[in-house]
Length: 157
Image (cartoon, rainbow, N blue to C red; front, side):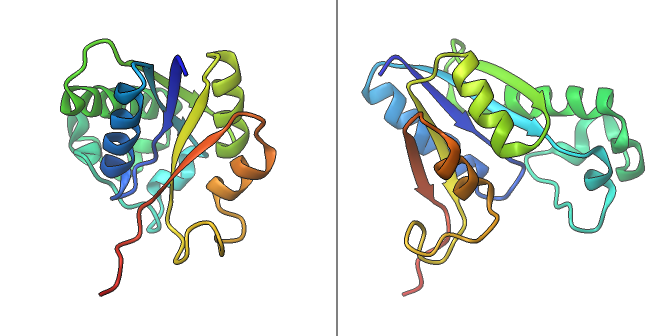
């Protein structure tokens, strides 16, 4: 394994996915690519959107201004740079793409010749009962590149 693509969203578990994926890559002495896929810009200005990692603090942009692709691109690049700094490796490559999440993750992994895709799963029983329609499930079903699925739901005692 020479390259690990770590797919990150803006969810509250993105940091865990980045850290676990990065640890796996470092254990294999592999290069790391952090990827964020921008979806429909309108989504970022809806009540469903939940900002994390300082995204809303990026240049003091209000939610209504986040519907431009250019602003989202800059904010996403800033977000990935913050994650790269958090992981402490200046050799990490960051990539922002726009499109449908699962398809774009698979295409990016193929284009960058990734040997494995690290991605989080928010489901209750992570692989056995993956949420229907989830990005992770779509990538799992459509990708010929192996996946490293990181369960991100907290275990209940």
